[in-house]
Amino acid sequence: MSTRRCILFALVALGTSLASNLHAQEAWPKRPVRMVIASPGGSGPDVLLRVMTERVSQALKQPVVVDNRPGANGHLATIEVAKAPADGYTVLFASAAGTVVNQALQPDLALNVLAKFTPVAQIGAGGIHLVTSPDFPAANLQEFIAYVKANPGKLNYASWGVGSTGHLVMESLKNQYKLDVRHVPYKSVPQIYQDMGGGIIKVAFVDATSSLPLIKNGKLKALGNTGTARGPALPELATFTEQGVKFAADGWYGVFVPKGTPDAVVSRLHREFLKVMMDPAMKERLLQFNMAHPPLKSPEEFCKTVAADLLLWQSIVKTNGIRIE
Image (cartoon, rainbow, N blue to C red):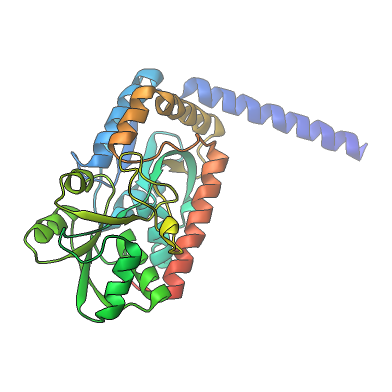
């Protein structure tokens, strides 16, 4: 009898769950959906998101409104969504830097990504670039390492801030090869380009999108790509791994919802963003951003990517003793 009761209870529970999810799917969305992004209006990620939300809005038959919340390396946007009701009406569009890297650096900021959010869809993947001024005496990563070792303490490099991806990558290089090179944190990548053009700084880590035109017109020299694969818009630039350096990590953008959001809403959002990603025009847009178009992942697969990347960045932070003051 107890076995029969358990089976009956399970069937009733399953039916209730399915009915609840079906109701959520039918009812959602009844009003506009807010898409929170850490990047400012007019930035590359903002432009990318608006292209996607325009199409998702049409599919949902409700406006998807972009809400720009820049600041604190993505922390303000993630906290905004983490505190929102788990009803599908507040969605996060975030980068790896604004989620897993932030958590690795500042675990006390309540940014536990997998505890606070359900990953919905991964959007693109790609590394960042190590670049130098055109006259820098190195043509590749190994020559750069040799130059720094031969000139300890004489070289400065720039990144877009303490705790940025570029900062963490260089700290990993410094640890592996015992390099003596000083970090000069900037507030933004455009400021780095300005000072590199003026000869104030010779070496920097920058994103793989905005650096493209400067590399192609010869104003910057690219030495390596930190991603797991070469950038589609700059296939001649070898990855760190291909050049014998033990480092490979992809940045990505992702769609997240607060933990507890109904499964039917997660599935619907995933399905609509998947349709956008499958559009040839979207693939071309990602190419313009120099981001690979990875195999389309289920929410569960994207969740595994988030978990694996968190472990990677936590290891880098711990190994190199990096702290945010």
